Each structure stands twice: as C-alpha cells, then as structure tokens.
Image (cartoon, rainbow over all chains, first blue to last red; front, side):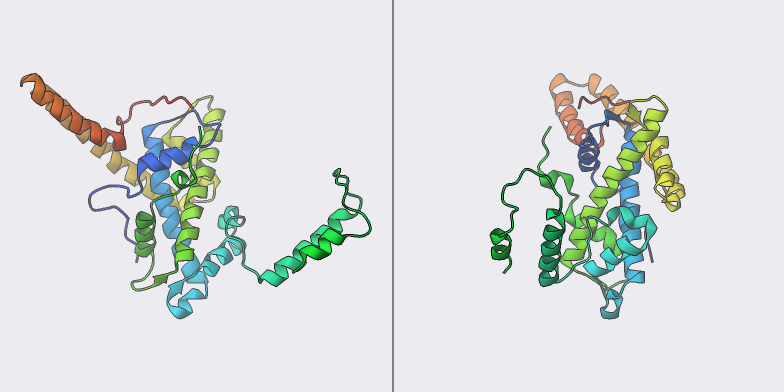
Length: 132
Length: 143
C-alpha cells in the first residue's frame, strides 16, 4: 500500500533547500524556478518509493521480510529504468575475488601501455609484494 | 562553490519514512539499504536536473521551469510520475497562493500598527521564507 508522502500537512517531505543545493551543484545550471524545485523534490520522493517497492518486490530480501542492499543492486543491474544507478550500487563480491581481478587488470594493462612509469619492467617485484 | 559531502545528502529520517511508506508494514530496512537509497536519490536529483536543463537550453532559457522537469521525467522513463506530479503541483500552487495572500494581509495589518511590532512579525516571516522562498517568482541566483 502506498500513501502519498507528506500528504497531511505539506505536499512534500524532502526539504526544498537541500534539493536546491544538490541541483545547484551542477555547473551548467544557472537558475531554478520555484515550481521546478518543488517538482524535483516531489519526483525524488516518488523515485524513492518506486525504487524501494520495486526492489522489494523483485528481490530475495522479502524471504526474510527485509529490503536488502542486494535487492537494490539487483534492480540497478536488471531493470533498464534504474540502470543509471549501476555505478553507485555495485554488486558486492568477495575481497579475494576482487584482488584477483586487480591482479589481472594490472597484467593486462602492462602490455603495450605507455604511461611514463619506470617500474613496469621484467622483475615486477612491486606487484608480487602487493598481493597479500 | 564547495559543498561538503553531507550537504549533497538528503535527511536520513525523511528518506526512511518515505521508504517505509512504500513497503508493507513491518518490513525491515537494513542500514546499508537505506544509505544506498539515499545516495540513489541524490543521483536521481542530479540526473533529473541535468536532463531538465537540456530542455531549458533547447528552449533557449536559462531558468529551469516546471515543464522542463516534467519533460525530464518522460525522458528518463519515469512517465508514471507525470500525472501525480501535475496533481501535486496544483495543490502546491494553491498553497503558495494562499500563503502569499496571507502575508499580504499580514503586511497590511502591520502597517496600521506600531513600527516595532511589525518588525517582529517580519522576522517570523523571514524564518518561514528561508525554507519556502517567494512563490512563483522568477528566481535568479548567481552560481
């Protein structure tokens, strides 16, 4: 069941001043009409509700009566509408797997890469030491 | 123009309440999930702003208006938001109009009273205005 947030006293719960700060952090934006500010705040509320309910509905958290981070990152990956969130809601992997990925990237990167570093020679001492 | 990281976040309590309203009663929301949704909301604002700004630029305007935001929602594939947003805007505009008229009446009343007393009332209005700003007035702020 979804209720319109802030319906009792105010049309919107999120503070307009804070929304404005975020909007103005975009360098290309010069000025914002008051109605546009309100709509952005309201749209953000609708977005939060949509993201939460969609993720809950399609995720596995509800097996334990919960909304989990995993539900959210799953949504960002699977649902096209939410794909703009994929970078900030990455899937979580084991640390050991991540370290192996880093290692591989480093090796791939050293083939024919010209970045002015002196260290990338045959011995590769630094790389080995880095791996825990 | 440096914002501290926390300034670009939305208040946790409000975000939590909005999430709870969207889910069935009693569902737990992990702190991590709540934090992630909060970040997602900030990103949404940035994305929507950028998109709306494109529409404003297309219209050779420097000021973002309501139409730009609604167009942005369609562009971002959030068409489902458009109707509820339009309805909410109507309510908001009526409220703002009511407030403006109430302030006008208050000012009129203050003029006919002593100077000191009217200054006090004006201060109260200022506190309110910090949040709301002038309704429907074009707002120019230097970047």
